[in-house]
Image 1 (cartoon, one colour):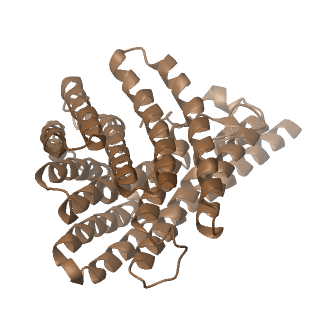
Image 2 (cartoon, helix red, strand yellow; image 1 turned 135 degrees about the horizontal axis):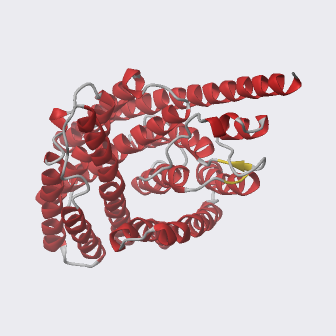
Length: 416
């Protein structure tokens, strides 16, 4: 998940006008009307994860009332993959945008969520809003990333992002068709696209952090990106995606996922994470990649049914939950200039997401007695992302306070 590093304080930065200092510190960058989309999408996505997804689980267990769509596996998958995941992707991959455009994109995402859960019979409108959002998101992300990709292997990122946005539109169309086979196949394809995205972005993030830490310790990490292994995993996931949407191809799907999981574990072991000392934040981030490898192995080892659903949740809860949580928090902590290694909330939240993943997988073995496991899993997930929301809001307040202080000091200096 390549994201620009936070700006450092340099003599050139110190000479900027107060308005420029304020914009840089608050995420506004290209002018008075430009904002960084993560300031909108990250807190909203964290709150969505903390409230809406557990609500959906409890509604399916008939423990809480909810709109019919949300109280169904279809609605739950929709909000997990297209609500939460696509919102985090938007916050991380969109460049700074004019304020009106950023708010329009965010408004489309938010309106789709609200219509989906709040307006009976509003499915068509919700899906239309979401389709417009997905197309607009692709148009704002992929052309820039294709132009920036100098090497062929770096074009994987915009390709996967474009495919993810297309799959979102297809998923919405499948929901309208109301055929279980259609939407479940597309949902599996979206999970595999997200797995490819995590392989590319998550793998590169972990590799860069591990290499930097080992360098500080006087060591050199040679196998960083490992492009051949990365390419093999991505090709296997592309094959698995094709097999997921074709009928009668489960054996090939399982073989592709199994090999991808094995190669992902090999790639992770070559980063020598056990040699990185004093970096609990790195271990938290890397655990997301470990969940990805385990989830792919599980998908390869399990037949369709409850066990396969448990394996899919190792990817969505374990890998996607852990990586998105840590990426959002690390991004905001860097912007707020907080020391990541000293933060406890990311570690506690990562641990809760791990417990949620284990409990959800265990529920597959509980049969008719799975409800307590699912409730506990939903509670752990909800607390983790509620804590993340609190920390993101705290970072935003720190950023705004420092921006105001910097502006006041600059104005006072100019007055003299």
